[in-house]
Image (cartoon, rainbow, N blue to C red; front, side):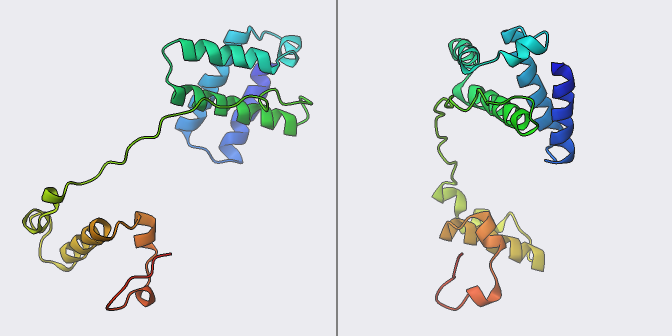
Length: 168
């Protein structure tokens, strides 16, 4: 029974959610690992899953060699799967609802050092064509103003005047 539900779920991710093939493969692997841990072999086993089994699986992963980021991703896969099962009417209560994700560390941003942005070094990256000048301006705007790439992409001519740039 569970492989049938899993294949339907993967089809849902592919067709309706339009997840990438890589993401779908990761979801399948995560859910298969959970089924193996919980010894899910038939419908009865599947319907007896509760939050304690899921917590035990998470504890085992944390105590193993898995990072908190990996554990959080695997929990997210299970969360999505059980939410879908509940929506489809296969289960009445979602056992993952009571479970919190482990805290993940924040990554420090990567930045360019000031000496790496000297005029000479930036000039040698681009030629004097229109595209080269445009690309140099893009790099300078990103570095000098700290705008996000999405903010830069959405800039309109009306947002720019001689003294300021209006970023939304």
